[in-house]
Image (cartoon, rainbow, N blue to C red):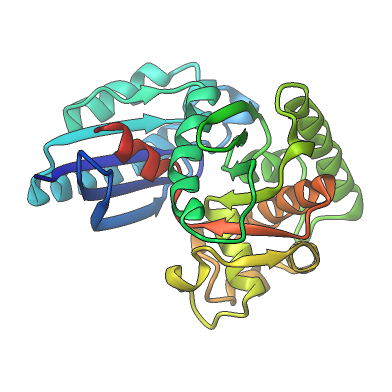
Length: 309
């Protein structure tokens, strides 16, 4: 008998919902709906340390929509996880109260380590079913405010969350359109320092397969594949060469907002931050020296759902 669960992942840039039926014996999933809204909850948090009122309003509006969907589909269990932006915010109690009143569950403001473990669980289940992906895996989850590095085979062996993300780096450095060479160089410095920090706890050089998850990575994949429109099935488990990652990152950083907005595979809510996300991925690929990144559409959201078993 399957169990119907609802998982919500609220990050710095987006809030996502997955409602799925799970087999309690095998963990096999039958997905009912998967939704994503760009709410930019982390707007300005890096500078102010607080969640902006308009960002909270956007997030609560999405929560109202998700609550109605969860009720309509009759989910038996709900888990709401909040990540980087909420960890950093002085007024996170206001966020917690607003979510609780709308969804009837306490939002869990999880640690970077917990976030890493959930990302690994969600991402590697699909990759492990494919041939040609040697272990250990290094799962890299590039979010809006943070990036998680998680190394392991079947279980997490080491993990570290660091404060680089597409929203954080855009607000901090890439403020011109397009960004200047000096701004890109400064952003690269932050990324390289963060990778060095992650490497103090995660032996990233041991990785045999790099698995990239979340919106920055999947968008880079769609661009590299030359898709006319975003196609989740084409992106999932795609293998993007290191050279293609570097090329896409360079093109995005050299383009204007209007040029990026004209590309139909880039979600409107990512147009202003995708250059930073692609740059993070390119720097990680260069550091590891691996030939490619395997892209998974399954990530922390799937890990949250599985945890409800």
